[in-house]
Length: 158
Image (cartoon, rainbow, N blue to C red; front, side, top):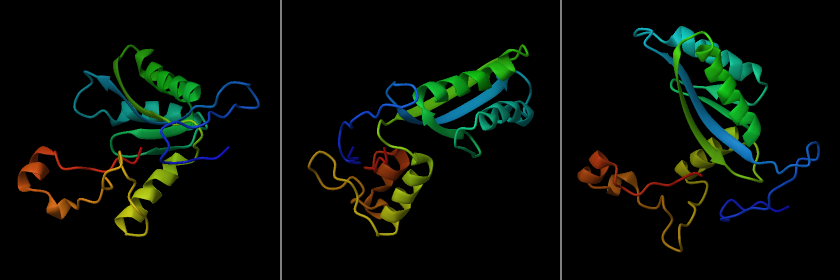
């Protein structure tokens, strides 16, 4: 199976253990209890613990815990993390952003490497719809209005 980062579709691999399509997913998961005051870290920590114990590759930052795995596994761990708080009676908030990309693995570490390579000039920016590369327009060339309103062209790493 050949992987092409710029292809619109990829061949979907089959998991030999389950016989089902393997839909690699990178997800940003945010779970918190509502109405518990201004400091939510103790509640967030409970949800993060569930995610870490799942065994999926993960990393926690200031706003989300990023996770990578098969779509079903990622959805399961997001639900379990939310249930950790909800089953204690807390009104619980779950924010879930996912990039489902069949055929790819290791994207938690690969995506940042690609962006770093582009920013350092060691890699070409991907072309978009036969136009100039999306990241060819340097931020210094944006007008003040574009910077303020976020309308300047940006590169998508997805």
